[in-house]
Length: 336
Ligand SMILES: [Zn+2]
Image 1 (cartoon, protein in one colour):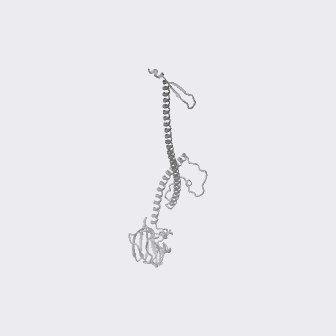
Image 2 (cartoon, protein in one colour):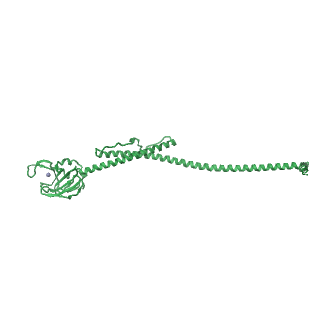
Image 3 (cartoon, protein in one colour):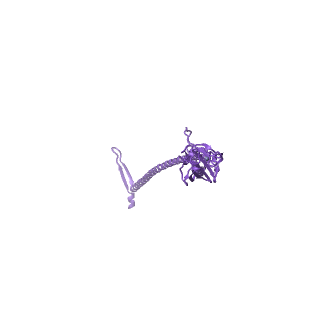
């Protein structure tokens, strides 16, 4: 029954317009089913392929967009990194310039130190200054510049950074050494200054008129030969009389022979004695500085006129004051 249904035929009549002849198509039901199934299959396959192709297009588009976004981000990142590298290179260059500047300053400090050493006692041994010569220092110029610009390579940047690092390490060590040496020089200078302060080497008066030197002379009163234990310096009544070195006032006294007189105790068993003062301006036990006014020039005691009898005593014995009056810079030392 079924088989006969498939074998039965269907006739399709195509009637053209006007005078055309009628076309009759006789098709079996089976052929018709086969054709319909084939067309359906073809349609389905086409639809599936279209969908798949559409999906692929969408995917590719999405991937393309994503890649574009990633590329833009990478480009930005690269740009940032390049900028950072450029900044670092500039920083390293600036540091290397600074190192050169510090080196130059260090050389100036070393020269200053050498000058200071010349002022310090000669016995002090000078340690050798380290580091490269001054010619290594780079000084900033103000003249013209030019030439071809070559981009700095990574290797050059590393070399500059390494050289700058070494330079800073060297500078650090040198500065440490220099600071230590300067400290030592300062102590030596202080010591020298203190020693100078303690050493009598200035005139005790404004006047430099010596009326009677140290040694044998005819006594101004008796006219007999006698030994003069000090030096007489004439001056105006009331002129200041100065301590010739720092020390402590040993005594302030008055008697008919020496008049108003002051004795100052200095270092190394040294004393200075100032006689015939109009008045004393210090008291026993006072600490006095070099150049400090200790009294007024006068003519008290055994004196023929306003003058200062200045005596230097070494371990209690009078000695020639002349070697202790060598300095001509008493004005610098003197305090007003
Ligand atoms: Zn005298």
